[in-house]
Image 1: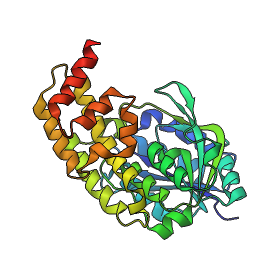
Image 2: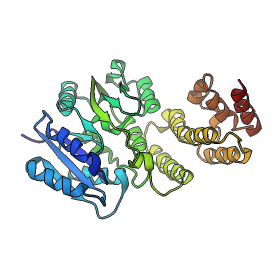
Image 3: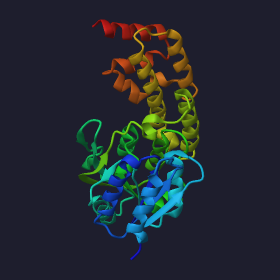
Image 4: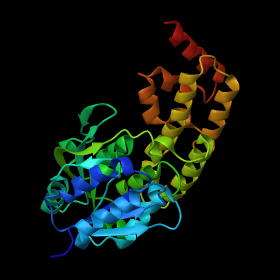
Length: 329
């Protein structure tokens, strides 16, 4: 019987956690499955651990050693070239999964001929079970639910993807920078027609402070954001739904710059107006009228930081005054 699910796992210096992930994959109740590991130039003994695992499960394990470090996105692109499964899954090498995860998700996918299936996860950082989408998201994708997908974005690892959707769309990950999963997921959200929901917690998401998403690379935050925004906008403009979904696409861009704004405000009791002016200038390269974004405007009604963020578009002094008033209350 052919392969039902290909699980692609980027690996980079995760010897501390890798064996736990491998054990959870080996225990999968779905047998028609393959595991594709892409070693992204690890300098610890991660690769040796993978080779040891390969001997244990030769027929289902593929190990690829990358010639250069490309980050999780680039490693996943390499893995996609080797995948033969009817459906694709991604896992992070420092996490682990429930034994029934891929069997549950595959059965759900086939049952409804779904393009994408979502499950719940345990967040180590929040110390609780999380379910990103409820059953109202299941079935044919309506416009409102497509917008909800963008607003929530989610994780690459809690989903099962129909292989043909990815191949036919020729979607790849941005490599070597953070946020590569946001671009990939948003492009898929433009194309999928049916979504299935498995209302079970099947993935354990570890808070690894040494991971790429937490530690990142040597690029400065502004450089990372600008590289991402340029690539993201270029990719999204190729989508047929770009004009229809433009407000929520711009919301995504605003979100990553709001994170910069929030971190600056949190870490600096004394705000320098020039820093606010610089952040405003950076955002306006991509969203000139960002203070009018319907999604952010609605959220700003209940969030002082977001209110100040939007006000900063026209009046940095007033934005600082809003934040000063908050501190005084």
